[in-house]
Length: 362
Ligand code: UD1
Ligand code: UDP
Image 1 (cartoon, protein in one colour):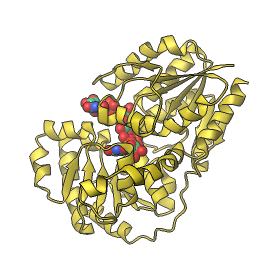
Image 2: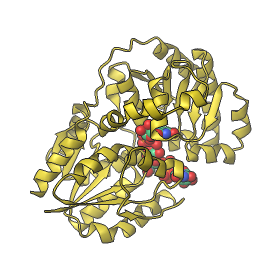
Image 3: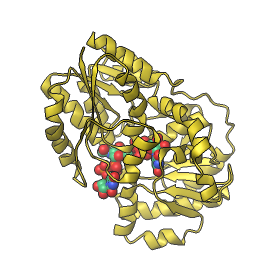
Image 4: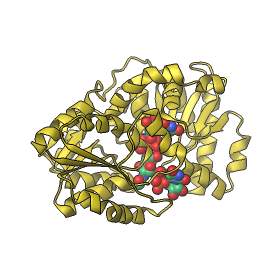
């Protein structure tokens, strides 16, 4: 019997690792779940444990509002005492929690597994891209979601330990969709009809940390709503909410009638919102993937994406944040044929990861 230590800390890690945690819990190994505390608000953290019926972490740390370098350093310090007893450390994605866990496993000489390995935006100005590269270079088991991700790893001379397993975003979604449809009353609460609105998420550092860029993005949202002839539902990430306040842009956001700002939603509400949306506008990774499953077209408010599979099937287009370009992309995606096949697998990713972990531990 071995000891697995899984480290999570942010909203997308909780969501996409929930099915993996459940699959690992069923193995005949000890499985310790650690939460770094990187996300901490009720609506960024706890609500997902409840919505997804995920067990409590065995170790919960606090990291509130630390700058990025201290998120990494402090997480390494906090988790070291747990990771030292691990045979295998598992991390997910591309956050500061991910890179802290990866460095820790490496320094301690533990086997490291990386879920969602090999995806690349080829833009090292993004903190996430650097985190991904570091985690992948240090990993022994690399769980690539698609063949493209595997090929990216090959380009970086990472060949051993790579398995293409799909993306656990689909496992999470399939495990919760029926419940979301039954339980979520978000459409009724917001008085929305199916296909009668766009859903927007927006929180990338490069988009929201600069006042001019954020002001331009507000103009782009206005242009998008006009192009679609529909209102936009905008659950606001706390980073974006804080920056709108800090940059004095709250009032301006309030003048855009078609932009309905709401608190971040739980997972079940988000699934319902996405499933019935006319279009998704986003700079989030997860929403680009989830849109593919729902056959809801997406406009990505970035210049690049580490999810190129979504572009080649025309489920998604890159539009940046320049208003006229975003409006044109919205018009194009509103008319796209919704016939593509989801490129992220059939919901067996968690089971495949657990099986490889089990074999590795022997
Ligand atoms: C992080 C990840 C990003 C991921 C996103 C998911 C890194 C480098 N980035 O970005 O890849 O897409 O999570 O949402 O790890 N805040 C709160 N309450 C919270 C969490 C955050 O108020 O529960 C505010 C704080 O002011 C914090 C800021 O948001 O300083 C940014 O949070 P942080 O975790 O550093 O980065 P994210 O932008 O959330
Ligand atoms: N999500 C949610 N409520 C929200 C915004 C996002 O439940 O208000 C979910 C979404 O369905 C997806 C995940 O959070 O599964 C994406 O996380 P996020 O956008 O924070 O991070 P990213 O995917 O960009 O790393």
